[in-house]
Length: 203
Image (cartoon, rainbow, N blue to C red; front, side):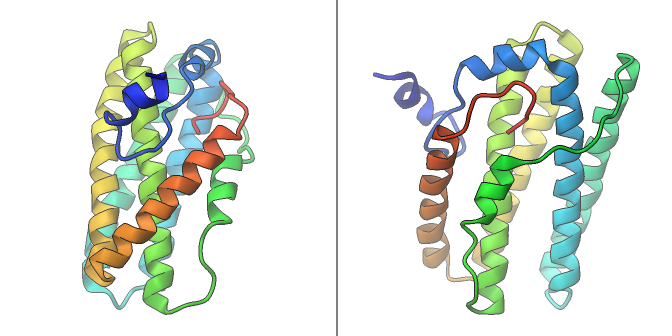
């Protein structure tokens, strides 16, 4: 059994686990990882704000995503704190090839609700991959404070993943959501397989 097959069932439905080399490379570039992580949290908060503004007539969506915005921004502040206490600089934003490739899979056209579903599923997928990588960091890096830090964030991201899926099923036929979710998972596995393993990126 390959390492992909042996770990697949332990993840949030992800079809391909992170290359086992990633966490060791990431630990050696922890400043770069923390900077990239901070921007990931900023983008997560911004994505939810965008959905709230575009679909402001969907009360349950607005009420559900509003506290997630606060949580994601709180995570941003916590990552910034980890940088500061280590004497590290909050650098410039970087090109996010992973998210760029996911955006290419978003279906264009269709109904307003179909468009919402696409973005909720993409957000869920990003949260799932983040959760998986936070787990790897919490279990494998030597820094005990960061171990605890990433364990706590792993739990939070898993909750966000579930919330995005549930919201998609609230506004779209659950069977259609499940079918499209499988397509997203297959696509993300192909994206990850074709990406170079980098220790300076969270994704």
